[in-house]
Image (cartoon, rainbow, N blue to C red; front, top):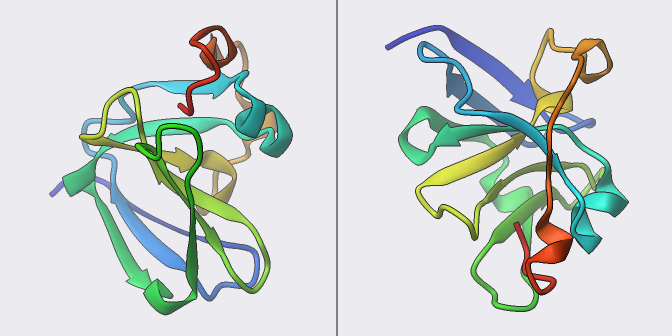
Length: 123
C-alpha cells in the first residue's frame, strides 16, 4: 500500500480511494468530443489502485461509439469521477478535480491526448 488519497463527486455520494504510492501513470486532457465538453484533467491509475468506497448505487454509466470505455458519474450532482479507458482497459482515468486536496488549475503543462483524431473513439 502506498499513499492513499480520497476523492468524491460534488455532493459526496460517490466516494473513492486511490493508491498513489507510484503516482499517476500520466496526467492528461483529451480533445475527443466527450472530454472537450467535460473539460477535466485526468490521472491514469491501474484498476487495482482504485477503490470505490461509497455510492456504487449512485453511479451512472455512459458509453458511446465502441462501448469500450466506461464513463462514470454521480446521478445526483452529475460530476464525472472516473472512467475505464478504451485506450487501455487496465486503467482508470480519474478526474483530478475530484481528488481531495488537489487543485487541477495549479497543475502546469498538462499534455493533451488527441482522441478526436482517432476516428472519434472514446478515450
